Length: 461
Image 1 (cartoon, rainbow, N blue to C red):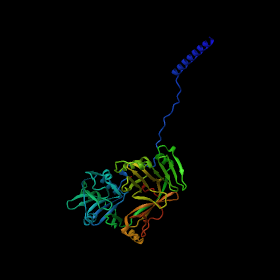
Image 2: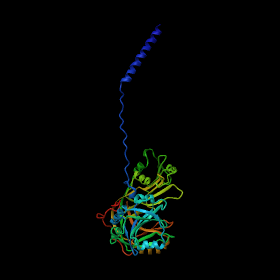
Image 3: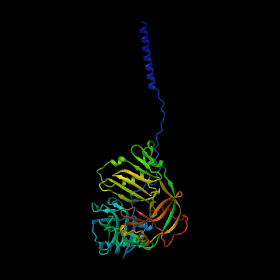
Image 4: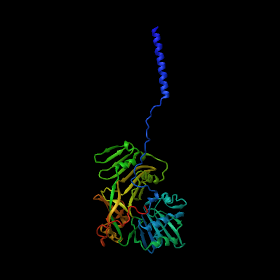
């Protein structure tokens, strides 16, 4: 009997306890700890963002006055800006393929008034259609153009434009809104302050490419620049979604590799530069085979930006391959910057794309800062340059192009930018020749730079 009473008491106790606990659970409010929302910190940019139009500029503009008279327009001049701004307003129509005999070609180049716009590389026509206005589609008439010549046809007093490929073998002709009067009053009226040039036809096969060299010695400036190293941590922030999960590996040759398991960044020993690689992007494919240059520009914009003035220098499209390689060259004033052999400063940004996917990305980790000294240097004329090539045993039938640029060397914690004549030959590395004229030396000593506009940030940037 007493056992049954004990079970009843225990059962009642458990029921009451359960009710009390249930009441407490329903009516009590737990004290939650307030968690602050995670704050997204945008990575610090290396440079600024740019649009396609800011990266595709003519490498040179030549004004033709007829009777084999020419002047060159340098990229950092007011005249260049005037011509470039006016050309953006043009539109081209009545496009049609055209073939010119050698006699017709020589007449246009040597005898007619014209503007000649040269690019560093062939520009795809779909990209051209974003830079200029076309009425009508180019279609299969021309895949890419390296040169545009706008000339006046004396027979009907109209201006026409020729879009030409690298060798001048394929071209299309178009009518344009420019008039012969515009050509004289807006463009060719700039003749007096510009450098007179001489034309040298290249002798590579049947190429109609032309090389323009200054008739007289001109002046360039040799600069000394401070530079700023870009911290690798900053680049890892912009190249990886979560840099905290990356692991670091150092190979026997000193190369450092950072990887998150899918992408990798490589730092070669002794060279402050990065090499980004995404193997997954390399394996992706798409049925849409058109160029994806906007993806390339946007990738650089979102992964560090552009630290200065850059221009598209090369666009390589290997046959039977989906990948494209874009090389953007840094400019100081009117001239491209190249690294001296075995030097750490690259002066270029290179991107390899597979359709809209970025496979590789290469850039220097040294940024030009400000220059603190300069001196004037008198440059070899075209005649002196040709004599120098003869002394080196280099024939014109080997030469593809010749132009002025800067060679950058790291020197006592600064960068020395020295004027060079750059000679491109078929199938060979470019030859860098000291551009100083032996006839007349530049100003001795280094002049202070307070009254000189910083050439690394030109108005056209």
